[in-house]
Length: 422
Image (cartoon, rainbow, N blue to C red; front, top):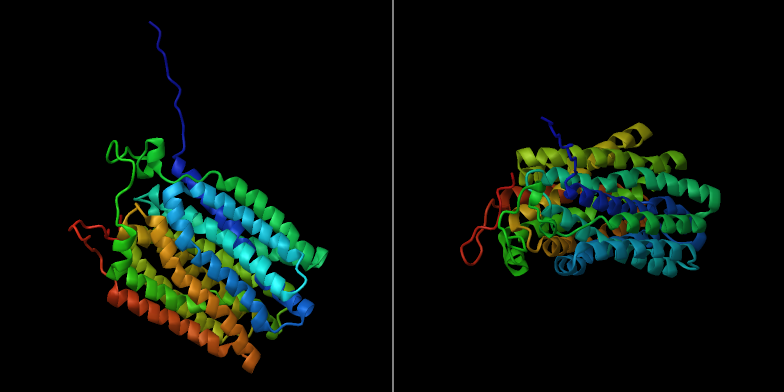
């Protein structure tokens, strides 16, 4: 008698490949955007501009890449995330290349502000929204892993930009970064898929919950945006966002003002990236166990505490401590927020709902970094904008703890908000 053995077939759940594609989008997109601090001084010198007017370049890009989620999210829900993500990465690369050819600060606004802003805006929400549909039990971890690309991009891209500026000049540096963004970002964005049901799977690789159903459950956009939970999230994120991105623009010049050498100052952004990556991994997974709404509260309080460290920091080692702590809680905030949206409102329109929510971050980003720059131009100090940024996070935390509820019902009586622990 012969015994036939069947070799074991090892396969990876395709959701992790979707996570990899989203990771590439966040690494390339936000990594390219966060190189801006390395270009701030060269742009000031090139165009004879104030720190506030140059900072407005980043604020414009940030407004667009968060604000455009209101368009790209619903488009991804309807037509699929992959095409939006690929298009966005190509536009990001084009914007960076165009910035290298700019002959005035206005042209930098148009090239970098619009190109990178629209590009990341097309790609980010669709990519992150797709990840939410592929997981339930490990949604916080998967979301954290996907957006950890932002942390690694913040770690790697600003020092790379500084090196390229020293070797080639700021114009050629932008061109090289643009070509890199288009090739790597668009290529890996092809891994993104909208929904596990397209492969006959349920979230986490489980069998589909409802055979024959071709769309996930959840609230409509109208139901979501009218709910108390959404309004609370929106207001909290709007207030928080006034200060969230101030360090990404002003930490390097702040360090230079306090005697830190330029090469060492730009490494502080990399330290934020290290902390951010750790926060996305550790706090994203912790949120799955402690409850993602509670974790969101922790992130706001943590960012406020970190900013309190910054306001009294005058030495390089103190700035390193700030960068690590701030990075951890900033990274956790970015990781947990999309998962909280999925918990409360389900997967049917998750990209569209995330996109609308992120308009709050867009408005805060438009105002915060540029206002901090103009405040510096006025009194040559960052103390006031840093304190305001810390206070904004405390207010956001108070909104979360006093306003968010655990469950809500649709107009037909069906509960659509999860507990925050699945």
